[in-house]
Length: 213
Image: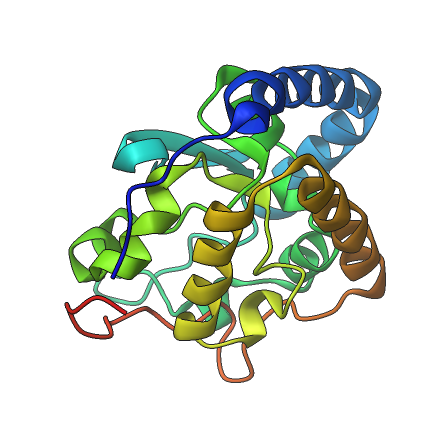
């Protein structure tokens, strides 16, 4: 059965402070990179350069997630968008492989929508599909990276991902965040576990039942 999450000292008084300092510093230091990537996206994929999408955050509050776009707007003869695998260009794949498409999320962190470390914010349409155990992933702010991302990223099943997300919620600490941060750097540089084996993006979540774990 799920239990109500109780924030500890680190989560209440320290984590947000670190998020502000790190995100602000990163935005300043990486501003040349952000400008270069934005220019390349504009040239190769067109406008808008920044992709905005509604995602559920802390306590399921909806916010606008910011990312560099990685796909074209190619459509079929009926005006419908082509499948992701078709619209995801070689350049877009490179952005995802290096996680450069995620850099605009530093602004979400600075604003307080997200944290540096936490469960990744997923699609709004998944909210009705979560069981009580899985809903616990929203008991903390979503993250730029998280425990699931350093333990398989998009190659693991949805059930495994949620197991990792809830484990993080229950065991959050400064040392765990530090461990995830260092492991994330290693994963990005190795270009591991970017996509699932069968799709350009991870397969859609369709639910695993409404009972508690």
